[in-house]
Amino acid sequence: METLEDIKWVDTHCHLQLMGDEINEEDISNLEYFIIPGVDVPSSLKAKEFSLTYPEKSYWSAGLHPHEADSLEDIKNELQVLMEEADLIGETGLDYYRNLSSKENQIMNFEFHIDVSKELNKPLIVHCRDSFSDVFDTLSSKNTSNPIILHSWTGGNKWTKKFIELGVYFSISGIVTYDTAHDLQAAVKNIPIDKILLETDVPYLAPQPFKGKRNNPTYIQYTGAKLAVNRFDTDNTNINQFNVYSDASTFHGSLTTSSGVIISQTRTPLASSPCSVGHIAWDTSYLYVCTASNTWKRITLSSF
Image (cartoon, rainbow, N blue to C red; front, top):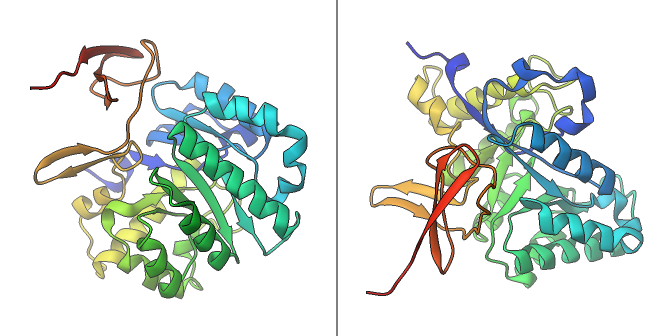
């Protein structure tokens, strides 16, 4: 019988490049896929390097965290080169809790990332702490249609309902397991299931019962379990309900519906781009199928 430990999870935000020798193969054995976000140029480079170690299951992003926004003009060109290589853009956004960079520069940095993600048609990872109004207004004004991932979402019902209107994805971290997270636990019940993602934010934000300790990718099951129990409002959640929160499909820009598979995000892989057998991608000219590890084949699309 399948158990919680048997489930393969998707960790949409884990800073594995910051853990050095503390991470090993066993720590990520329960992950089907994971995303390694950059927060500045050095960490983005390390994310890229770490991703190359696990090409079949890892993706990486390049970005400048709002804490570092004051340095944007100094590193913009170098960062943009990395963004063109990366799978996703970010971590960006606004952080008015610590205010380590000016609000003006944070917003300028945020808008730069949004513009680049639109130009490159790549998903955007957004940090939002004590800045719900400005993040909402900025995203609304940019009218972007590419996927937006709200990293470690902590908003209550009011802001959750508003951001749902933008069609964003809500990435839920170990915070949802905390006894004090009543507003967040209530809010996630309103999020459409196909808009919920999971993350660890390793090495930060360890879930109960590890709160206050260094986080580990294996702990993602505790967040998934809490979400499932909370969402289905029962203490007797079965394994199929846990599986709802381990699905990888939304990250890849695809959804499985009663009408079939919808792949909403275009992608143009190279012949040797990272992939696992069965992955599918498309652009306006070709349909791409991964036929072997890191091996893509394509067929031409034509009108009929």
